[in-house]
Every structure is written in C-alpha cells, then in structure tokens.
Image 1 (cartoon, protein in one colour):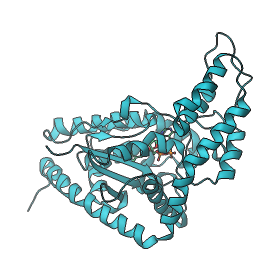
Image 2 (cartoon, rainbow, N blue to C red):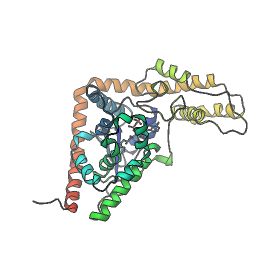
Image 3 (cartoon, rainbow, N blue to C red):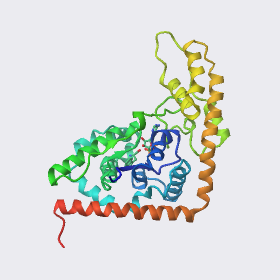
Image 4 (cartoon, rainbow, N blue to C red):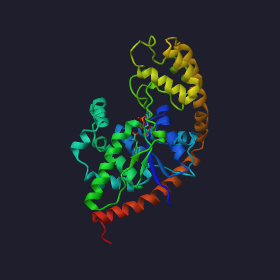
Length: 331
Ligand code: ADP
Ligand code: TRP
C-alpha cells in the first residue's frame, strides 16, 4: 500500500520558537518514517507582511537549518521552499475562482491582521487560506501536522477541495489536521499575552536560537501570580509553565511542582530555576547543530534544490490532472 501523503509549512518570518517545535516540528519528525512527507518553508506566505528583501534569504536558510537540527532528515522527506514549486501559485489561482470574498473576510486570522496592520490589508492577506489550501492540495495531501491555531485554515482547505470536486469531478482529498495522541499543543508566550509567535513578544518567546543566558533571563521574568486561590482554576499562564516543564523536562519533573501548587506551597522561583535548566538543555543541541548547518550554505542550497525537485515531480502530476478537469487542455 502506498504511504499516506503529509504536507506542512512554516513561514520564514523570523526565528523558530518552542511553539513551532511542539506544535509542528515535533510531529514532522515523528511522521517522517511512516508517511510520504512534504515539508516546506512558506516564503510566499511570508510576503504578506512585507519582509525586508535583505533578510528573507537568511530567514529561509535558518528555518531550514532549524528544522533539520530538530531531527528532520532531508533524505526521508521532501524539504523545499514554496517558491521553488510554480505549480503552487497555479493551483492557488484556480482555487481563487471558487473562494469567496465573504468567507475569506470572516477568517479570524485575517481579522487579527486587519487589526494589527491596518495600513497593509493586501489581497494576499485575504487569500492567505487559499494559498495554504494550494500548498496542501498540490500534493493531494491527506494529513497536515499543524498547531491548534491553524485549524480554521484547514477547514477552509477542506471546503475548497470539496467545492472543486463538486464542480469538476472527484479529485482532491479533504485534508485533516494531524496530531499524535490528539494532543492539541498551544504554547503561550511567557508574559501570558497570547501564543508564542515569531514576531510578537520577543522577550516572552523562547527561540530555538536563544543562548543559555537569554533563556534563563526570559524564564526568570515569566509571569506568575501570588499562588492558587481556592475555587479558582489555574490561570493559563501558570498552566503554560507546567506544560513547558513537562515537555522540555519530563512529566516526573513537573509533578512535584504541580503537587506543591495544589497544596498551596508552590515556590515559583524554584520552579522557574528547574524550568530554565530543562529548557536550556532542550534548546542547546538544536541551536548548536543549527549554527553548524548555517555555516555551510552550499549544503543547504543542495538540500533545497533536491527537495524542490521531489516536490515538483509530485506537483506537476497533480496540476495537469486539475487542468484537464477544468478544461484547460488544448494540446
Ligand atoms: P508563527 O505564528 O510563530 O509565525 P507559523 O505561523 O509559521 O508560526 O507556524 C508554523 C507552525 O507552528 C504551525 O503549524 C503553527 O500551528 C505552529 N505554531 C506556531 N505558534 C505556535 C504556538 N505558540 N503553539 C503551538 N503551535 C504553534
Ligand atoms: N499558515 C501556516 C502558519 O501560519 C503556514 C502554512 C502555509 C502551512 N502553508 C501551509 C501549514 C500548508 C500547513 C500546510 O502556521
């Protein structure tokens, strides 16, 4: 039986962080042996926020290195840049004809961007979910390992696939979010103001490129409270620290601190020291390996080139099928 197809991407908008690792990359690594995987750097998606052209390439190469340093093997998966696969924008154009302005305007991530960058509400931002659907459907992707924040986008990809199939004939699968053990991981920023993300709250985000000193400093400043209040649930920013403790260390390391919290005797200072050491030990090997990889640009270029070829082989077959169904086949 042929392997199921897996597709996922990460935007090249900055340094990867623990949220990217636990929400996405960790799942990529676990899937690489059993599935037919296409993982890419979403550089076109990054353009929606107008990155500095001088920084784009560095960002792409770093995201690539950080993925490999986290355990992805370019021999086992197709690891490529979105912009190296011209069939993606072609399918994006086709899907744009069956995507409606009204539904796109309702997407929460679009509304967030309108709020955050009212001066740059471009059409690429509006059609972001259409490009994402094209990324997935171009390989007939069935499973998509992404964090919880991407579920709405996946639902739209299923809608577009279904609409295409109804109009032109059964062709695309309806891609599903994939997570091991159904874990919905969402890592919050350390100041409790939202999810960890590449470009916001940099002092409350732990990057895979942070050095030991920076990690310790950021964790020491993490938001805590005066301890548990009877009858009140644990605040999400405290829960987040326990989550980090159990996933960067182990559930056994976290348990005594959780017991102390429940017993009303938690000393956050002690807990943060433990957390800082666990995060330092977790990030260090990834950071060091990634720095090494970034020194050899020729090797990274070769990885991108080989990955692009693998991705184009799959994409060109799928796009010619789509063209035929639509009626674009003249020769
Ligand atoms: P960012 O939001 O940091 O710019 P991306 O949008 O490129 O990151 O997301 C890449 C992947 O990482 C997606 O699968 C996304 O769901 C996941 N991800 C991003 N931030 C988090 C987070 N804080 N917790 C869990 N997963 C996350
Ligand atoms: N939109 C995703 C994010 O912000 C990144 C992405 C682009 C993606 N294309 C994709 C993820 C295709 C999965 C599949 O996280």
